[in-house]
Length: 221
Ligand SMILES: [Cu+2]
Image 1 (spheres, rainbow, N blue to C red):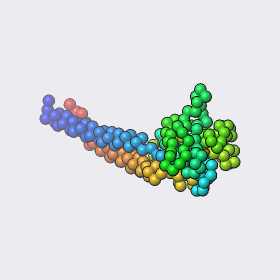
Image 2: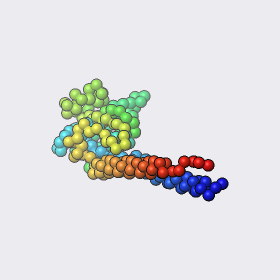
Image 3: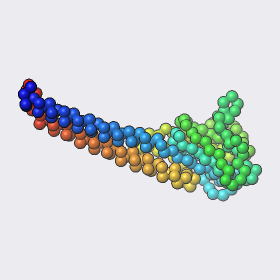
């Protein structure tokens, strides 16, 4: 093989190494995004025994209508009424509620948590102050308007950089935990910054590759 042939092979090898390096960097950035994005789930606090949309004692849920992301947790806490509030899902399997607090919440510090892992609209009621039929999806909006102790949760999947719809944002601003809302902004920031880095790397790699292809001597041997 001629000296120039070896030179061309060496150049090709160098180009190949750079291509692999750029691919590794892009892959690592994309992998980082995949790891960061699903790790953050929010917790939404709903006060049991507080006026819907208000701050005073009442046999209602303070955030009767909320929108959350798949994987988020709703955290019901006792606010008022020593007779207690029992959180029960409208949906049932074989006559048994799909989820419910193990016992009524009857005093300060008592809570019930449920994590929503599938998309959909979920309704629930306090079995001490409302009827199951009040939480029927056909009646839920009228029941909430009438001040009954029922609630509705809309769960939507998380798109990259997206957040859940917030149908009752004014109430949620008051009842959402700081870590929840902070987590959302941070997740959006990380995804946006990561996407920008990946785009820049791909553009730089493409430009370099084109420049080198144009410069290369023709394969004469
Ligand atoms: Cu109740």
